[in-house]
Length: 521
Image (tube, rainbow, N blue to C red; front, side, top):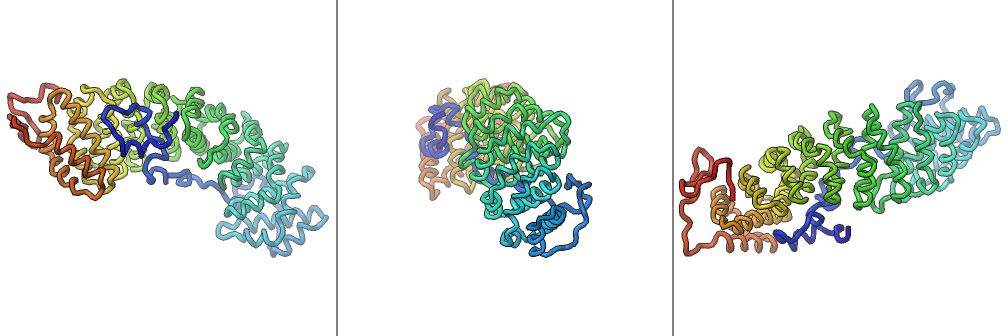
């Protein structure tokens, strides 16, 4: 949708109570705080992986082919690889692989400088010797697990087309090792990712997923696909990566957390973009499965599933409805009390994009029971989660009806909302001020602004607003001044029968009582 790329600056400077539609209120992931965006897939799985390869370890798919090799120096390795004797070539290439498989500080640069790469890449084309192909691919996998310069050395050496060709190898172990190497290359960044995609690798990867594929092999394939969907500046060609959507849809039902995690990470990358990309995911019918994974006990799966669902509700009302209709709000209600603060924060961010929707969506938020845990986060959550809860409340007050804002007041939103006026982040303070303006304006429209002003004063909000009139940020003090001037200035008609405090709760005198069932306009 046009104009959505810069919504946050416009919201901060030009916020009007009822002038913004849901498209302007919803926030893309890159428009949220830096802290939200710092949470990367690397928290769960590295973008590139070194294959350690001790003898007999399960990460060696050709254990039966392992041969005993003496410890060779780098010069001896290169000299042996240059031999015309295939047995010596194999022994030397395996020695190179083992040298590069050291878990700590493998001598990748020394091996590159020795000149072994061209010969190693050449061995990839020896289809008469799959064991040699495998050892060469493994060595290259570990070189590509290093720095960008080391990964680029593999690419510049011409390994890419040869590795892609190995995907069709009749030997599944050779094909799997090629998948791993390509995953490391794709995970290095946008340039190498696009280079891998340019070799038409996605269809070849999808073709590898047969009914009899081993779980280990499938993990590598899905991990590589997720790396091909990764990175945003720029994102991959959607036409190149959307081919994997039917496969990812099926894999959401696979009974392996590693496969599920990388499947959800791939979908989180693909939904982190324009609405047409989100729609492509919604059209597959996978939203119910994604929502179901919001109750997955494995955080490695829950985290990317939540991020994907959160991205979907940044889209259109129809796309947001797909999550609501699948029971997403019930799941989010539970996640707002999750023991992990990062999950709570992202759940609150997701709710904030739903409360940015239409009246029906806000009503679903009310009826799902989300308000109570959301306001608990606003009251006592960690600061990052509180900021997301502030957005959720202010979006609610911006798009909600008078009756819906009345329900929010019944949940006693004002004390925790006013407490956030003391936030150190001025942008968050502005969002709080906008929420208060919305609430007070709603009260004005019904002739009840004085009652709400008294509630704000009794929970210490007026003192905080007056203090903000000395804030160093011009927008903050101007908004605070305007609120105090418009809603708290002395009038010729004094307020009569204001609220008193009974047992720590606000109560109205008999002539101005809170109706049965709570505050109402």
